[in-house]
Structures are given as C-alpha cells and as structure tokens.
Amino acid sequence: MEALNIFIKSIFIDNMVFAYFFGMCSYIAVSKSVKTAMGLGAAVIFVLTVTVPLNYLINDYILRDGALSWISPSLADVDLSFLSFILFIAVIASFVQLVEMVVEKFAPSLYNQLGIFLPLIAVNCAIMGGSLFMQERAYANIGQATAFGFGSGIGWWLAIVMMAAIREKISYSDVPKPLRGIGITFIITGLMGIAFMTFLGIQL
Image (cartoon, rainbow, N blue to C red; front, side, top):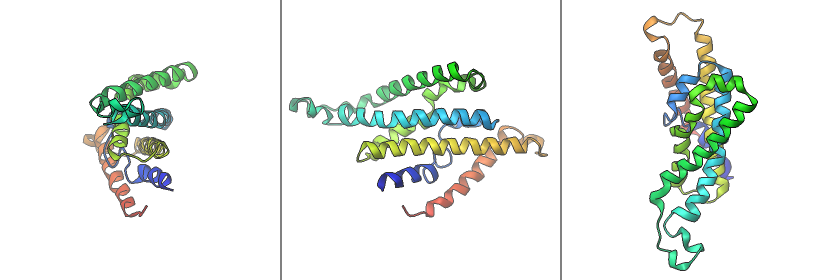
C-alpha cells in the first residue's frame, strides 16, 4: 500500500516538472510534437524505473555510512556517501547509452527527431533528481524506490505529452507575437503547475 501511495504521489503531487521544474530543457525543446514527446517520455520512464532502484541498492549496500558492514565488521565505520554523485551519474549514463543504441537501431526516425536531447537524458536533472530524492527520503525497501522511480517517469511523461498536445493546438491559434514559442510555453507550464497544486489536497 505504501508503494502505491508513493507511486501516485510522485505522479501528481511531487511531479518532476510541475512541482520541482526538473528536466525543463528537454521538456521545452521536445514538446513541439506529441509523437516525439511520447518517445522521449518513454525513454525517461525506462531510465528512471531502472536507475532509481539500482542506485538504491548501491546507496544501501555500498555508499551510506556503515553500508559495508555486510562485507566485514571492520568496515562498519566506512562512509562512502561522498561518491554518490559520481556513481549515480555513471549508472544513469550507462542506461542512457543503452536506450540511445536501442532507439537508433529500432526507431531511427524518432532518434533523428530527438537529436541531442536523447543522450542529454544522462544529465537531465529529473533523472538525477530521482536518485537524489530516493537517497534523501530513505525509502524502506527497493519496492518503494522502484515505485517512486516509475511514478516519477510517468509524471514527467504526462507533463511533456500534455504540453506537446497543447502546443500542437495553439500553433493554429492567434497567439500575440511577443509570446510565441517559449514565452507562451512558460505561461502554460505555470498554469499547469498551478492546476497540479490542487492534488496537494489528496490525503495518501
């Protein structure tokens, strides 16, 4: 039940885009087309779902203070948490490279549309933020960490697909010239963020 609460909360209440404004670079740049947004969103879901629980295990059994006691009691005082950023990024970059190779092999048109933003998932703050939030919140088990990673990915996918659908529609609208492009996108993102704040009233 707790894992389900974490999953729902990470989609609607702690949405990476609307609550923390993480991953805004690719969110703004790739949300011009629903098809492209769905492709990048699926990649983000996969990377978050895999890397958050994997980084949970690395943090729990290698990095945190006393984590190495399972190897030897003499290592109980060792604290490798200062290596969190390096190891988390290494894990994320490895899986992003895997995603990039798969997309290039099986969906070359999508690969060309995503361009530089596909490999940039490795430095997407939403991806890194997922692992750092996992570490900060100290989830009780890997199931909760996985639920958080998967839910965060779904939340980011939902945000970018919704924005892409809106931007496709407003391309036919008479938007004032100074607001066209990024201007109206930021305004819509702010309004969507306010709308998502209504989910704060949900008791989980």
